[in-house]
Image 1 (cartoon, rainbow, N blue to C red):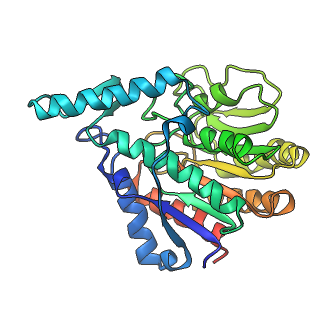
Image 2: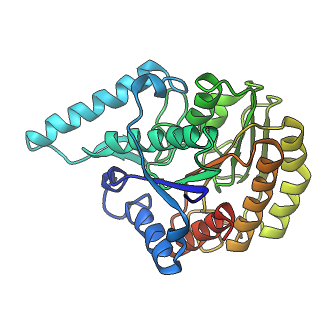
Length: 317
């Protein structure tokens, strides 16, 4: 068995939010195509994601939030059967279709199943090729293409259900993981480290000065050399001091220089370098345990190449 798991499910392809929406099923197709063409897929252990349970989702979200999502899905199904519209618009950026609820449960289920597998020693690390993404989803709010915060949920799951004492969440998406911050700020068991373009969506950037957050704003057109320096100077010392027993990654690839949804200047080599540094921390403190979940990345070619670079480091090939 490969040491690196690749968690996926076809349900995650069936969620979509309308023609032309950047967070589209083709994103997963681009990753699968790249794994096939490169041969990298042969080095991974493929695992179908289970469905998350509602009580598991409530580790990171309010019951009202979970009930609202489930209720909206039921109403959408009923309306569709009666000839109603195919989508339910939740906010200006985010909509549900009749298959969204299943995709939400698979994405969250993937993150928790990957956590189970690395803690059990069945895998050293894992990548969850899932959608919808999660890092904008707050405790009780849908936002920015995100419904349930997969990474924050998995971190809480590792602590509450597996009894870990310290975990870390690292977010290299171009957008600030405001939902993750909302869920984990002030929880000293969880260190959150990120960089993000600022000023940019979501407006305001980090809103908390909690001691467990290392959220670093950078201006548009920042390139990889600067990002590597801030990782060395700001992230790594805090990660070493925290000594996480498992590292979670919000793996957004929209900071790539070819991605039109952001204006940062990273390339595949930068993602590989960041991943190498995180793997090294995980091996020093967490027996190599690392769980990565797909967030952003909307230029399909750049997304496929960047995920390949990320996975090559995780798999050691």
